[in-house]
Picture 1 (spheres, one colour):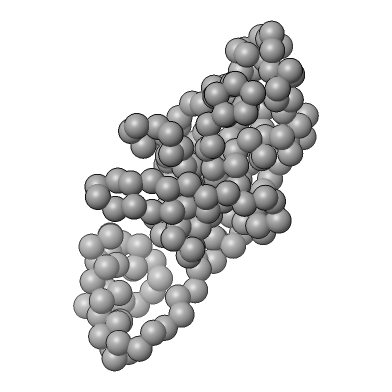
Picture 2: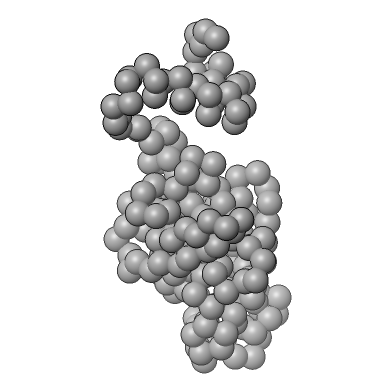
Length: 182
């Protein structure tokens, strides 16, 4: 197989990329090689918008400067420890009022979290507020102390308290806060 451009790699699909990676590993004789992050991973931006006082555009560098948290998910017999920032901390930075600010009309508020492929999930804001549900949902940028796998970048939602992990979505691009009763 001959590859003439980066565009050709995209057309290989997952199986082709895995085979290409194995072939490259054989060519370098099993020596460890550094793998550069995709160019868009460093420039990836997580948008936080909607009913917040301070809309945010967060990069991986911004998340690195915030308090860090870990969460573990087990799926298909594999356990992965993710590292990132509590969703609560990100929303507090965006100006959302938790605690007593959630009572009354604020209780009818939720998040729509959107991935690169358009997949969306919903979280009630009360479920992540420590004075109510207190769920430790994180926005992860690392898995097992390394960068997220390419298929999960730039960020991943990790909701370890969910029995099914359908809300632990990857390739996260946007968090939108929706207030039903302004």
